[in-house]
Amino acid sequence: MIPSTIFRPYDIRGLAPGEIDETVARRLGKACAKLYSPKHVVIGRDVRATSDVIEAALVEAFILSGVSVTRVGLCSTPMFYAAIGEAQGAYELGVMVTASHNPPEYNGFKIMRFQNGAVIPISQGLGMEELRDLAISDEALFDAATQGSETQDDGLLERYVDRICSLAKLPERFPPWRIALDAGNGMAGIVLPKLSKRLMGIEVTRLFWDLDSRCPNHEANPIKIETLAALRASVAKNQCVLGAAYDGDADRIGLVDEEGVPIRGDILTAILASEILRMKGSGVILYDSRASWSVPDAVRAAGGDPRLCKVGHGFFKHQMGEDHGIFGGELSGHYYFPELWNCESGDLVLLLVLQMLLRERKPLSAIRKTFQQYIHSGEINFTVSNREAALSKLEQQFAPQAALISHLDGIRLEFRDPIQPENDWWFNARPAANEPLLRLTLEARSVEQMEYRKEELTRLIVE
Image (cartoon, rainbow, N blue to C red; front, side, top):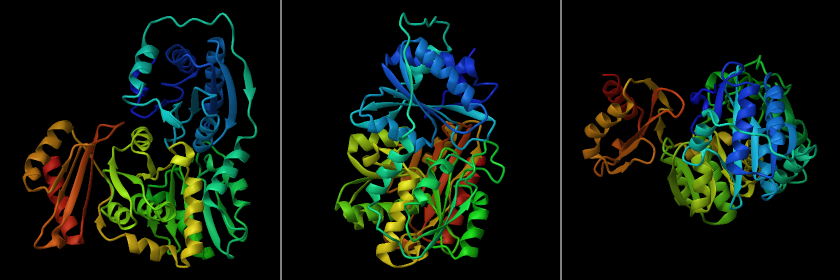
């Protein structure tokens, strides 16, 4: 029996084996075939120890259901998205076998559709509930009278690298810079050897590019500061202009500047938004409810229209299409581009930052400091038995004084003091999508105000 708990808001994940195995993969493939009636699907996988057998079972299920399958094999998630997008509807569905940045004992599926020129996930409110209900039901799912076929696409990597390099408009040659790139033994190790050859003039220090499902060097999760220790040391030792680290399936990226300081995801969103608006002149930029005021400040200053979006790649990809966004960024290190069918590419982020450094002729730390104008708490997690009651208590306590109230994602309240603007601050509290946690983020103009408000909010949450 398939456990319903593996169906998350944005994808499907669970222990493998244990919660996800070949039986689950076959049932899921047949359920997708029945629900969406695709003629042709594309399937990729990451390097996890269970991915190959799960992929094989998934392929078998689709073929027996009369669906033709193109396999791209080992790939990063951005490569997988590109396979769907560039086919322009030839693949009605795509499945990536991955559990993203989860530990090696997990696996899962990202299921995508091509709609209205974009690659959109099967996610909460966008088909996940229907897929879950059919997959866990007792309904019989029969083989088709005619089987589908199977083909292999071995040219995806070359096409993907060509595309992102053309979007970044790389120079013929960079200055004699050094950069450090940490793949975390994950799927960025597929892309970086080929991508680095396009960075003419740049000396690249390789950190953990060998694919290894055990992640023996560190967890492949760049938003955790402790995972960046080797990267920061390499940047310092080799006098690099920047360092970059990827998560396990390479759809997220984290940067450190030449001083070894990590650049928080919302600050990088502000930097990239300014760069993109410089090129495009105007447009909608999406940012999430945990992001610094630095983001809307930077977007407005560059002539753009900043808009809040609910946390999660499914929500961002959908709203990018609805609002005709020219860029979107999350605190977690996901960055979205319409030129990539509203999907992420940490590789393109890296190239755009290098392009910006070439033009600005100033250190990345100086650029970071220009945008980092407020004191941000980062995301703080609380185990709370009744998250709705905790949110209600916070709103009752603070809403009467708030200048802005948003219920887009949990609650976000902003406070402005017209007499003493140094007291301005905001907070966001929202339930975690995949865990029984309440996540708190806040920001203020001073360390003292941020710490005072953090203590006040913490006390209310834990009482």
